[in-house]
Structures are given as structure tokens and as C-alpha cells.
Amino acid sequence: MEPDAPRICCLDLDTFFVSVERLFDPSLENKPVVVGGHKGGRGVVTSASYEARALGVRSGMSIRDATKLAPRAIFLPGSHDRYSKYSDDARAIVERYSPLVRAASIDEQYIDCHGCERLYYRPGDVDADATIRRVVGEITGAIGAELGLPASAGIATSKPMAKVASGLAKPRGVLLVAAGAEAATLAPLPVRKLPGIGPVAERKLRERGLETLGQLVLAPDDELRPIFGNMTAEIRAAARGIGTTELGRERPAFREHDPVGERVGSISNERTFVERAPSDTEAVLSGLCERVCWRARKRGMKARTITLKLRYVDFETVSRAMTVPATNCDIEIHHLVFDLYRSLRTRSLGVRLLGVALSKFELEGAQLLLFERSGRRSIAIDRAREKFGFDAVHLASTTERSSSRKRRSA
DNA sequence: TCTGGGGTCCTAGGACCC
DNA sequence: TCTGGGGTCCTAGGACCC
Image 1: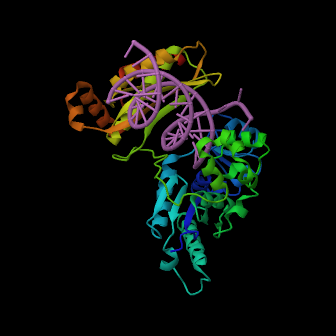
Image 2: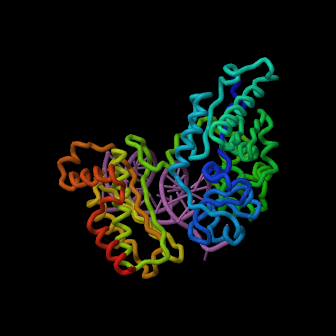
């Protein structure tokens, strides 16, 4: 095995949410389609068809802006259950070719193709790279033929280079960056194309006159250090195509249900609203507490740290955290969150967002939970939710307030 | 471009212990 | 009582990703 051969593949499903929607409604084909919310409504674009992109729509943009740019586009709220299923199906196809697969997100997978050049060699292949390129083309072809979903892939000697290559390969392409060709491939690209450089770093680089990755590579260390800190060397190397070949950890993003035993670093839920009266704010907090606790219990985990996040209407965002003996009990976390809220809400300004996060998990000792009164109640609630869904059962503090809200609005 | 919701990782300062 | 340095944990905020 040549250590520096291009064997890391990044496989990406093109305009994934839009592509899935088109499977269920073929009339969406060849039209500008935007997934993320109803026309003119709140929310942001999570996926836009190429026809919509041609009108200036970009993912991450507010739905309202997208509506202005593409008033005749078809806007869809999205159906995550479907997306999860097709994501799993695409992964199953990839696993027929290599067991070394990691899902980086719902529409992106990394594959370690080391060894595939021997396993899949065919006499027509001019060299090992050609074999890899052909095999990856077969994978994207199978995803297209069996699922009806377009996919692209980049193959390179490192993970960041493969990621950039998959972007360059779109749509429906496969791009292999040969060993030694990395720096020249990256040099003309805008800095933003490199994973790890976001809008803030992009702006700071531009202020220093650095627009392309080629310029970034040549920039003196004291120009980059204020922007990237200890990551400077890693970023500079990535800009030359050098980086890890480790596939990284599996990201369980976007799962509709929390699988038992699957480890995550944090569980959070948040809600944004236009503006709410304080009494309603408490109902929202109750609901958020219940939801994160429920999700933690489903995973069999207890959290030691509880964090409350609050965003005012002027977008100032603050948070307070508290570390306690591990718990996943609604009542306990309710009390903690309400304490945190009282210490956090120092301004009289309207609240735009509230979020509750659990972290620093310990595995649940189920026996303990059974002996606690509130624990028994949680178990009863969870059983009902197992049958009827999360909203079937709520704590009194949540239901009283939300029903009084309904009465008021009725 | 006035900006959702779920995550991960990094940094910097302070408390506390030895 | 004061001083130093290292290690670890906690907290708050921010950048980034999809």
C-alpha cells in the first residue's frame, strides 16, 4: 500500500433533500425547489435545487430572502423521516463496497478505499487510481440507479482534500485528485471552500488581502495566527491538501429517534419565537426540559451538566450552565433550568430563543431510577410516549400553560 | 443575507488541589 | 502567611458544520 495514494473518498448526495422530494413528486423535476419552510415564512433554506441556486438561493439563507430571490420557486417544509431512510439506504449501498465507512452527516459519507485497488482491479484499469475512480463511480451509479438519487464523490490523499474535491465534482461527478496535485488544485479556490474556514475567518482573511487558498499557504505565520490560533499549522497544511486520513467519528445527526446506547456529547433542544410574554416563556422551558430528558432516557444516559441558552431579540446570546450529580429526571432538571433562567434573564428585552442542553453524560444506572418516585413517573410517561409519541403526555406545568395559551388565542 | 436547529470543538479565565 | 507551578474541572462564549 502506498501511504500517499489517494484512497480517502468523500461521497455526497447532491441537493439531498430536494432530490428525495423529487422521488415523491416528479413534477418538481427541473424546477426551482427550496426545502426549509413555507414561502415567505420563517426558517432557513436547508436545501435548494440547482434551478433555485441559479436565482441566487443558497442554503443557510432565510426563507424570506429566498422568497424574494425566487418568488416562483416551490417551497417545501421538509420530511426528515424520509431523508433519514434514504440516508441509511445510501449508506447500505456504500457498505457493499467497503466496510470502512463513516457518516459525517445525513448526506455525506467518508470511505477509506485502501485495498480496493487490489480487490476491484480489472484488466482494463490503467493504474490503481483508475481502479479506485471506477469503483467510486460504480457506487454513485448504484445510488443513482437503485435509489434515484444523484451523488458526487471526491477522492484524495487526505480527508479535507477529498471533501473539497467532492464539491468540485458536483453535480453527479467523481473527481480523483492525484497524489502531488493537491496544492495546485486548491490554490485558485476561495478560502471559504476549505472545511474549517467559515464566514468569520473568511472576513478576517479578506481584510488581510487573502482571498485564495494559494495566498493563504504563502501568508506569513503572524498573519494567520491571530485568526486560527493553535490551528494555524493544521489550516495551512489543509490548504496544501495535507491532512488526516482518519475517517473521524460517526455523526448521528438528524436521527428522528434517539437510539438506545448511541453515545453523543450533548443533547439539546431550542426554540425560536418572534416574541413571547414571560408566562409563556416558562411553558416553553418546561417543554424543552421534558424533551431533552426524554431523549436522554431513551439513550440510557444521565447528564451532569445542564445549560440554558437565551437569545434576546437584539440577538445577544447568553448561557448559564450548572454541573450537578448525574440526572435525567424532568422535575430535577426543571428546577435547575428555572434557577438558571432567573439568573440569566438580566435584561427586560424580549426573548427570541430559549434552549436547554444536557452534557457530560454518564451511563444510566437503571436500578437507581426505579426507586425514585419521580423516576417511576418518568418511566410511566415514557411508556405512554412509546405508544403515542412525545406530545401524548406532558407535565402539568407544561400543559396548564400551553392550554391557557390556547384559550387566550381562541 | 437581519439569521433554524441539531451538533462538535476550541479558548480563556477562575477555582481548587497538591 | 506568602509564593510558585502543574493538573484538572468548570463556565461562558464563539466558530464552524450540515
